[in-house]
Length: 254
Image 1 (cartoon, rainbow, N blue to C red):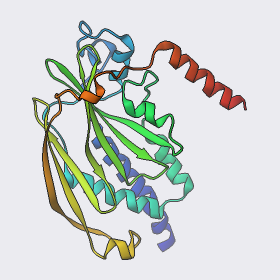
Image 2 (image 1 turned 30 degrees about the horizontal axis):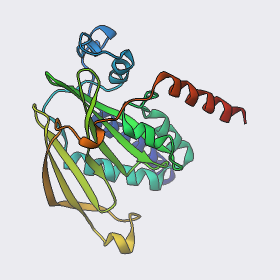
Image 3 (image 1 turned 180 degrees about the vertical axis):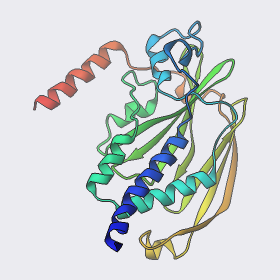
């Protein structure tokens, strides 16, 4: 009986972690058909590929939050999963995640990840809209772990020009960052120290547990303020995308 119960633990953790991941991603509006999912003002969106890019992000309202408590619970569940699940169970979780498809590289992270030697996983989290902007929130994780990831927001004009990109939240081994975004795309980013039952640097995570969070810093960000370094950023052209696809096919043939 004890063995059966122990065997159920990883399955329960997978269910819990999938639930946290689903909560991170915003709920799409009812009947998110092509007509209303990016009714995200089709009249003002010029590039049809940009419209398709936006459709990957579940629509969310403003204000929008990734709370410290929610991220703490996600981190604790993910750490337990990594320690208790076997390869098959981790593969099931991997397959449950939604990978962001961005061949045109509207996000700089998509361009950087294609050159990374370490596998980089980008996942669409939420899309918000104001009168003049779209804001797309995505998560980024490296390798095949689940616990540690960062959350980013990219703000675009209604014609698809990238204005700014910020890291707004994340989970780490000793630090956690949460965010609150208001209706004007003004954000407050708060960084917390993670309190472990036993010293993390001496004991790591195995057999350890998170007992709380201590607020360290807070920062206000205007997400609509244009970043000078992104002024000349442009998505990949059709020819570059086709060349990438040919390279990928060639790599599979080899």
